Image 1 (cartoon, rainbow, N blue to C red):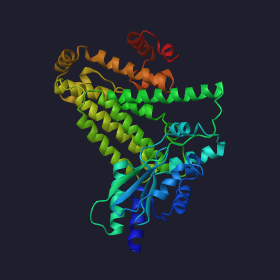
Image 2 (cartoon, helix red, strand yellow; image 1 turned 135 degrees about the horizontal axis):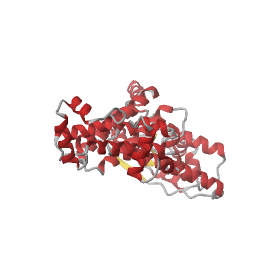
Image 3 (cartoon, rainbow, N blue to C red; image 1 turned 45 degrees about the vertical axis):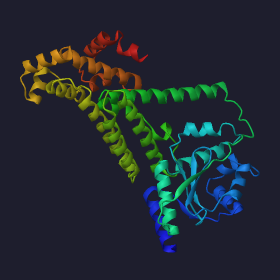
Image 4 (cartoon, one colour; image 1 turned 30 degrees about the vertical axis):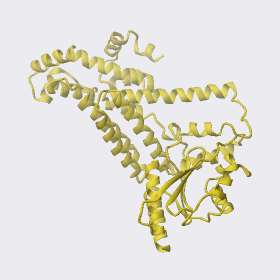
Length: 397
């Protein structure tokens, strides 16, 4: 059984970083174990004498039960007192830096203590709760030699009572925090807008301004987990963006679930840049394939080609050659289906992408014009004024 325990312990650690431990389930020993494995988080939330520790004295030793114990902040353990096993700690959902700081606001903590806690949260594995429960029940059942499926019992600790109130932020600190949040939400909105349009080139420009270390949890001794948490947030964000486009939820959910599995299989941060691009491309492709269901196939193909090649020389003649159709036929079909001429649609899409780049990048106006397919900056400014009523520089201001 010792060999089996070591095998399972190594397997869980290598596959999803879940920690499996042997524990003494006597009250004092178990509370000490929790303290030692939560980087004094438990002591912060439940100081000595708090009634939560009395629950360990009353904890039964039912052999058919695994006990789920949840601390404030989402830190979760699974205990099997009958066999003396514990899985965890894990998080059952990713916690951003901002969420963790809000959790700590009621406590009067020194800067180093906050840093330690932020790093602790960032290093915890994130495991979906039903998966964690299933793993715990299977492992405990296997180690105890039981054939039946073990039940999950929940231990609900009393709410933590803050002892000291943190002093309020200064007005200067509030302004800095507000601007950071505003910038994060603006980038998030711009990215989801680009993906919901199926505009991959714009999405790639915007994602280049994202920093996983500031968008989700802080960088820490486990940068891969930090990046995986960011991927989870990004995947959720993009799924919600597509839910509003009219694409069937089944298709969105299938893609989101597949990407979620791939996130957990990432082995190195070196994979991330390419992985980000692939995720954006897959979501944009789904939009491109389903956003215009009533269009004729030729028009649908032309719209997709235009959005993917805005920087190219997009004329009706050249596009028709690529699509292997007659230019006059393409022009007439496109105008009838879209309600605008081919060139007007191209200019609309180019200026729309330019507007996003003006707002969310520091590229010079001449660079932006070239990026969206205008070699002549004056002509770009004329088209931008036509669609937005202001010049590019005024729009940026």
